Structure formats: structure tokens, C-alpha cells
Length: 308
Image (cartoon, rainbow, N blue to C red; front, side):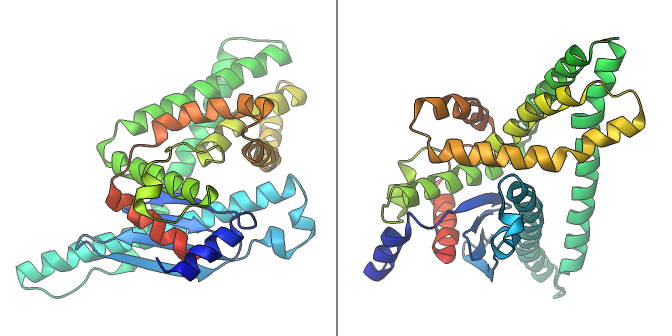
């Protein structure tokens, strides 16, 4: 790393907020003005896609208001995440497809359109399954238990939702293919820790840091589950499909509140009151992160340097 770049990182570390996401064989990083995705190809080289991106919450003053900005950022993050996953999959699959074609004597490279369509279809199916597991199933269980009190109905509903959430993460972690994704998740956190510690962005510096981070998306999702319990208690027991639909419409609000709590607790992570909010999320991250290799951290750092 050049010395001017190091000085630039150190001088801006307090002003720049950086986040990321693990993708297939890589990491996406995002700063207030740039999004970059770095992917390790099967051949061993690292390819990078870098794009300018400024959140609507920064461009539109009204959308930058507390709670509302969280809902906006959630939607943007889902969109950017899908785009990064598509890019990473195409880079990995196309590279592998080219090698196979050369061995068989063919030269045609598999098109990215099929990969993109497959990923989009997978995301749609996944969202449908998530809706059934995290929204309908808890309601179904609470109704079958015959709970009449609105308060206790929603306590059962929330407890089932939390149990399903933790069990889902646990079961997904048993899938062999997810191990590498969880390693890149850990690499993302290690790299951001090094940046926030105002250290030179080297593999050696990043490797010594934790794979857990207070502002992780896993912690955010746990906060969504917890806050939904209190919001749904306030709404009472749903007696019709219309009232169930109203609960679903509150999800952006719940996400916005969860975003504010996650942001606030991450900012004051060293204070006693914040540590109470952070600990459950850090515990859950032990399921969604793994210790990365040096090569994986190298990819994460490449993406991080690009957004700085």
C-alpha cells in the first residue's frame, strides 16, 4: 500500500461509515458514495466491480429522517446485495464454464442472463419461504394454541418467530456450501475492524481482529425480531386477514426502528448500556461467521480499498 493512501484512510476514518456483505467467493463493500464488489476467480485472480452510489436517505432530506432512513436503506441494501450476488455468481460460474468448454473443445461461454434469472428466481422463492416461516407460521402456532389474550398471543407469536429465526440460521450453517460464505462474512468484519482501528489495511492487521461486529446485519435482523414483538403487542390480536395484513405493513417501520437501535448501539459499543443491546447479536454472529483464510481477507480488503 502506498503511503499517501494510508494517510487518506487515517484522516477519513472518523467521517466515513463503511459496511459490507459476503457474496459468492467475495465481499461487497459500501461507503457513502461508492459500492464495490471484489470476487476471487477460480484462476486465483481478484476481479472488482466498482460503482458510484449515494443513498436516497442522503439525497432526499425527508428520507434521511430517523426511522424512515432505516426503511430506505433496507430496500437499497436488498437491491445492492442481489446485484452483488449476481455479479459474483457470474464471475465464478462463467470462469468455470469457460474452462470446461475449452477442455471439451467448445468455446462458447455461458451467458450471464441465465445466471441472473436463476438468482432472481431463487431470491423470489426464498422471500416467499421467509414470509411463511417468519410471518405466517408464528401466527398459525399462536392461533392453534388457542391463546385469547392479545398480549400473550403476541408473546407466543414472537417467541415462535425468534425460535424459527435462530433455528433457520443454525440449519443453514450446516450446509457445506455456506461455510465459505460465512468465512467471507468474517473477512468482511475483520477488514472493517482494521479500518475503524485506523490501522494500515494489510492482511496481517486485519487477521488479528474479531469476526464479530456490533453493526452486523445479523444483529440488525435479531433486533427486527425483538422490536416486532413490542409493535405487534401494541396492535393486539389479529382477528381477520385484514388485520394480519396491517401487521405486515408495519415491517418497514419495524426495520427503521431496528436500524436506529443498531446504529446507536454500534456507535456507543463500549458503554455498558449499549453492550446489553449488542451481546445477543454478537452471540448470534457466532453462527453466521467463520474464521477466514488470508486469501479471503485479501479479497475483503481489496473491496474496502476501492470504496475509500
